[in-house]
Length: 99
View 1 (cartoon, rainbow, N blue to C red):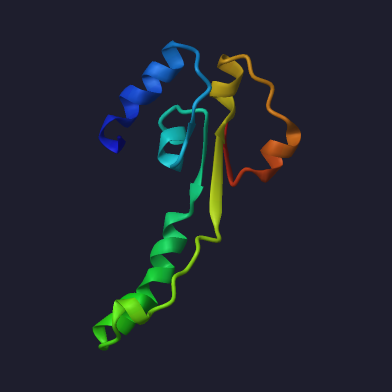
View 2 (tube, rainbow, N blue to C red; view 1 turned 90 degrees about the vertical axis):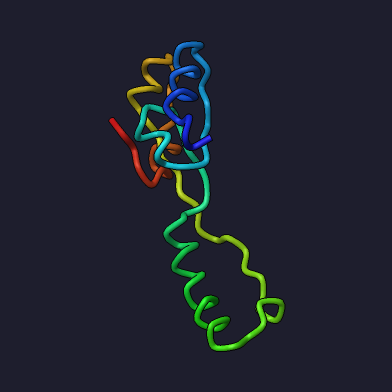
């Protein structure tokens, strides 16, 4: 889907569908809203696991970690074009607001 990101966003915009995506890149390319895992945090937390595996630990012996950090981005310009009123609370919660 990432390869067709711009086509997906364009279709949602043309059909006036307020779509929510899983990655901030969609919002930067013209999507309305994204909410998903913070990938930088995921990679940062994976590094110690890689280190432990390279030092000889078995992957099956490592504890499973749940994703704890999520990020939300909102494109206010697209919201306005779709005729949506974004609540102030949602704007305050967003990690990134594109005007």
